[in-house]
Image 1 (cartoon, chains in turn green, red):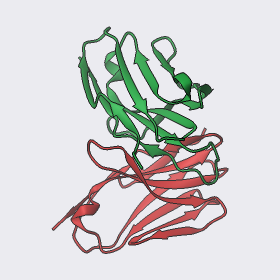
Image 2: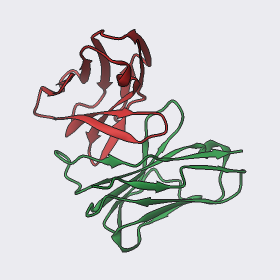
Image 3: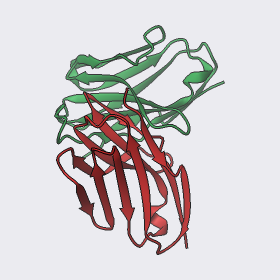
Image 4: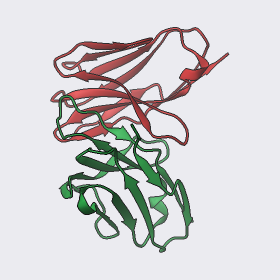
Length: 116
Length: 110
């Protein structure tokens, strides 16, 4: 079974530029998550999709971050314009359902973003 | 607001030692607790998931316990090996999201 794929793996941009990350979840997984992991911290949920609908985006900085999941499969996360504090690893995860008690999230390798 | 804390932040031990990683959380109303492993440049790998009604889970040399009432979990690693070197994260499933701790960075040297 193929895992969660993410690209690019690394990205360096200057502040105020735009950047986009792509995620392909495990086939058949209905739920997709984007996390931000700042160095030395645990991952923080940015947005959760159930199929192609948003379940939770309460911690997404909507003035600069946007995300979409077309056709309920792949997803893109965009930052426009980027700030220095956006430097982090962006992790994508997927799970079969949103079952709280039994479901496991499977994580991709992440995209390491450096904003100069 | 749920807060998850992990102690110690870093740990360096010689190969063969048994060790304990600690995780504490402030809100006991959780669905489950998971322990993850994170290797440099890689994503997170789920190690153990403990349901809120369970006390412990075991997988190979790993044993995780959960005391919901006191807001604590421990991850016990028996006979540590250099290949166990990684960052270990605990996460509680609270309401509808996973809340992660800051992790324990473990180094096992030969």
